[in-house]
Length: 586
Image 1 (tube, rainbow, N blue to C red):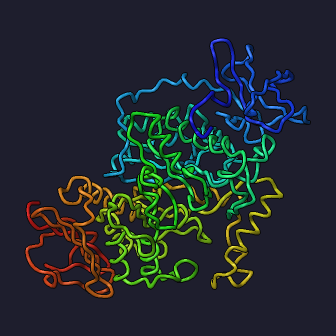
Image 2 (image 1 turned 180 degrees about the vertical axis):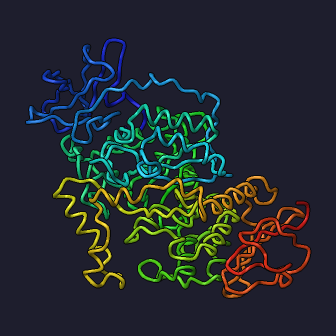
Image 3 (image 1 turned 120 degrees about the horizontal axis):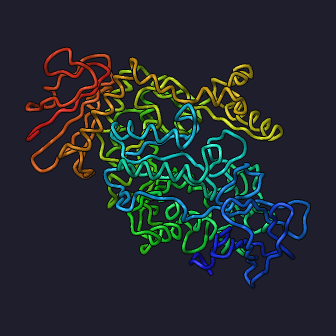
């Protein structure tokens, strides 16, 4: 058996009660524990234990007790953990929600503009329901897909989401299963898709009870930066693979999500064939008639992610192409340590990246622009800075506006990070709510992490790095939405809206034709990007310098369409600004 569907695991309501099933191949006995009652389960040859309990139903809370141990454990397939990762699981009826999106076609990667957010900090309340109130604003902004950071149940009341341990249970602090369904349903009513961030490279360190069910969930053949590697290719790995494939299908089927962003795929180790990513890709595409988008986060710059499964690839739609961000960040802000050290940070290097998709990696011949996801910032590039500062807090606002125009002019798929559209003043810092012992280690590790950086060589400076465990670190990271109504937030948001409208409606920019795009530096501070279609052409001149740039240097007949700053003189691009020009029918 590989990943083909067989009988469902977890808790499934039936006409006569609830059927419980769990894989525990080494166990001598397994029982469903509901309150003070225990119901013995029967084992099949594969190590799956099952029982139907007539007295159970939606809302019933339960655990699995293995070999008459001292305590029971949450269900690895739990749909709900209302008391957190250490509490009992809750039975959920997957068919009870009243959906209103029967005509929703889903998403395609072409034309996608993604808005990445963290549910807990995107609104003051930090819930799925409160986030519904922001959807009309995001629709008006011009994005068409929302990407929440991981929502699987995590320990404590605040977390980025990458410490999740209950893959099937939407975070109870955010509102739980029905609230997430309400959010997805509301998004679809506004023609907004939902791309969910999922983590299949590791499990969180607190509340992870998988080893109690089987030692085979993990392997010491590989190592990840975040903990034990998951066993996708070793002995008894079939049900391990099935766990994540079932999970990917689950979000598409039961929650109607329109795609998955697969976290840190370079740390998903699998030497078998087909690769687990190919299995996931095929499984989710065959479980629905809607269009889906699958995106990999990886620094590998490897075209195999985008190659069809039938040709030996993974069959995904897009990959994160971080080198655009790294080169631009080095140029604008001067970052030169760690992974920035491999880049020169020149506009010539940036132009080369735009034309190739990435600088270092496999050849990109035959790939399409929309298969490369570009950002100015994301949760990692902001949150993994010591103080969580945003790009516009490292460079002046005018250059930030110009860089924003560059991102949204290019044919690659853009992703915005929450708040960048109004130059939010709030940082996005690293925050956790672990138990005291683990929390102390996280705090120490966070500060040690920056020891190699010259700015934090002094121990006193490292002590100033915000404590991830402090509630104030989380509170400081919440968006202050009222900033949209004041300067510079109001003007920046208007610019983003104008840029996204142009990107969507313009006959040249709306067609993501990579081979009809060229970029070159006019000098060390001015980048020019030209895009064309038939006899139409659009030109972006990004002037990061402190002097005007004369448009006559690139020829005549160009008419301004949009500018990030007022033009001081005719035929010039102002310092620290960008202007879009058109030629042909406009």
